[in-house]
Length: 231
Image (cartoon, rainbow, N blue to C red; front, side, top):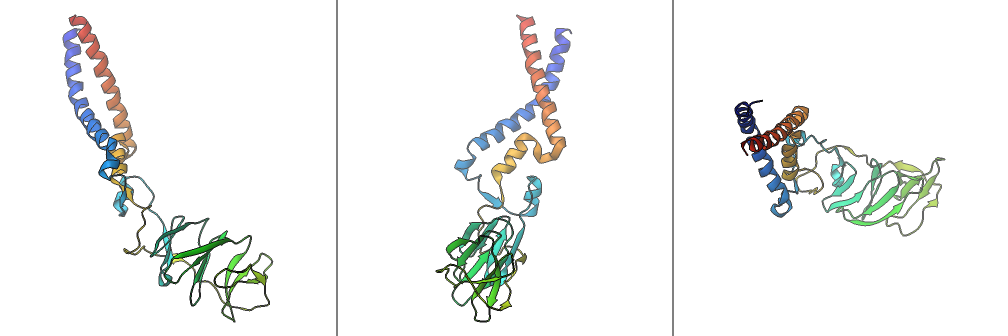
């Protein structure tokens, strides 16, 4: 290929690649200092931002009257993040001075305000509800009931009690504004990274970035050839 023709193609491709290099340079510079600018904090919680970042929106369920919520695998209250859950919350039992919350393997003791006090393993038991005497009950796999005290000060004991009220179940809910979930949301840094890689435009964006990268390689190669011939 003649040097003049090669130079013409080098210039044309260079114009296309120039905008891509500018985008990479700007987004790369922002990503390099994103933590200093506070861009790594997940502040954007709208459905649009999750869609733009190609992330699943967290599922929220809760017992709104008790002020307890499950966001993905996290248990939250008005006091903030309480615990990491092993599966779905099985239910909440409410007493006069405390609450008991359980998932498949753990039992948490909370104050009425939602502050975490203690936790114990369930060891194959499940939160069943309350007895006629107003005490919390656990149920074993064989269907037998085990009685607890409200502050988990003693080990569960087999009891000939009658279950009169089951636990409050979590239902689909929206997280109230006064409850902060610092683990949910999309950060500006995540969006800039998606823009930097082209993933913000889906599969088409990834292929476009790959094509422009090949153009950049072509620019470098033709530049060396032109420089060599002019030498």
